[in-house]
Length: 415
Ligand SMILES: Cc1ncc(COP(=O)(O)O)c(C=O)c1O
Image 1 (cartoon, protein in one colour):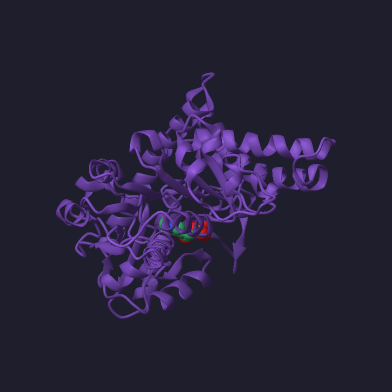
Image 2: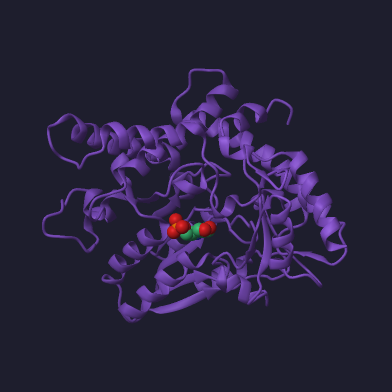
């Protein structure tokens, strides 16, 4: 992609300049957490140094904090594609928000109800629902994985969802195999039997435009530290459900949506960082489009460019890995299924462990994770526990040269 402004993007991320043992560091650890642009650091610093306050009072810093929260909710509404910013809930991270939502929903379920989870998701989209089912007396149903390419086959999904289903919890993209799921199809199937759908979009968020209306899901969660922001969990839910569900809250806290979900004092500086991270993506979209477009449109342009750029890097990586003896990629490797893949590639080697490979890469300044990445069910289903796999995750600031350096170095390590 010749017109993708990679040099400008990289210049905004001071962290990318890091050197390790004389080598320029290569950040392939994005699925665990991305680097942040300077604008995110500046926003956090500005809030803490000049606006730090609690909410709801009439003095300047408190009023500015109230505005910051609403402004960040509006930006997140554009980020996920909802109209009403009051459908955005903030929390510590995706895991905590999911546990909170699952707990509230469990108070509405009972014996005879069925909750559907997958073998492909991060445990943060499995265990909260399994626990919620246990607390309410509901039954858990599992959608199995095809180990050949780490996809869910339509048949297994259809078999798991029926008239008793109350909830289907699905990941938009796997943080292990990179598989992108047919969330829209699953929502349509779930809604046809009256069930709700919760989408874990944590891994999807830095790679593609989230559109809750197009997905037609009921709840969706993501985390700003995966898309260049701060440690900030974001939950979207339909207004009517957020208003009615029996969420655990203090007597002193507001009944207003979404604040009835936002327990205790929030991480305001993290919201400032989240707002700036969305601002970064918006900047990219405006820069590419060169037109005066809305924030949502700018995000659409940005993600369309990111998707195309990352896909090229991803397939360069996959084709390179395919040529290496003893390397097995866990996920889609057929280019005709390109649209079903995020640029996250996990692999194992027949003789070296993931941890050994990760350690050798780290010595040379290449940051990549070894393990199960908390996608425990998938790692087990693939027979990879306890070692897991080595994961290289690409983001919008990585380059083809980095992919090539990685492949050269990996080849030396494996020899
Ligand atoms: C796919 C996926 N879901 C959920 C999570 C958990 O997110 P958080 O750290 O915000 O709780 C992660 C974190 O790695 C993830 O990759």
